[in-house]
Length: 178
Figure 1 (cartoon, rainbow, N blue to C red):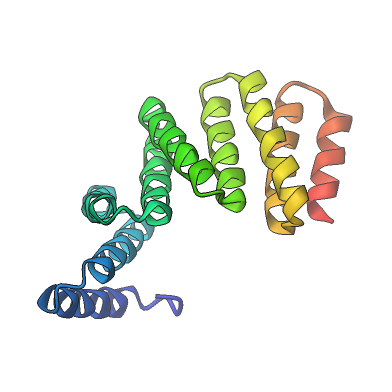
Figure 2: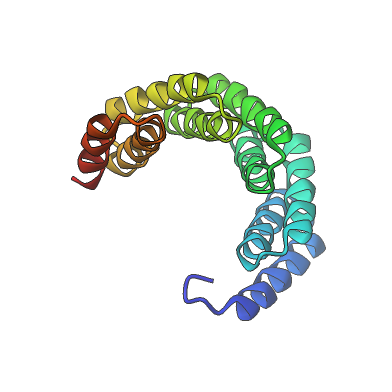
């Protein structure tokens, strides 16, 4: 998959999935389903991606693997956001956020805040988007997560740019670049 040999990756994941089903490794099955879903998402086959993600989510919920459930919800929410199904995306990201707070996954919480900000920005609610971006930025700064900080600064900058606050936008974009 990392080499871009997608068809080979799908074959390997499916072979592994078959073995995991044979030995009744539910956790392995769920992870394989999630990985296959990610490949189909990257290939643009959204219906297959959603099918695999939902299969994985169902198993992760049965196993009560909260971290894995949050990952599945995040993946499903991202697809919904990209498809313009913003209310469905919000529902997934909010469920994800609740779980991440329960398990104290600060990096996941920061990612969920960012995702919620993206959805609200897509809905045209820049005030709410900015609220979530700032929450995300504060957590990423606390975690010293440079990639997260850069990403959030870019998102904040895009709101400033849209609203004609060019000097603030440039400041964010330059900080993001640094």
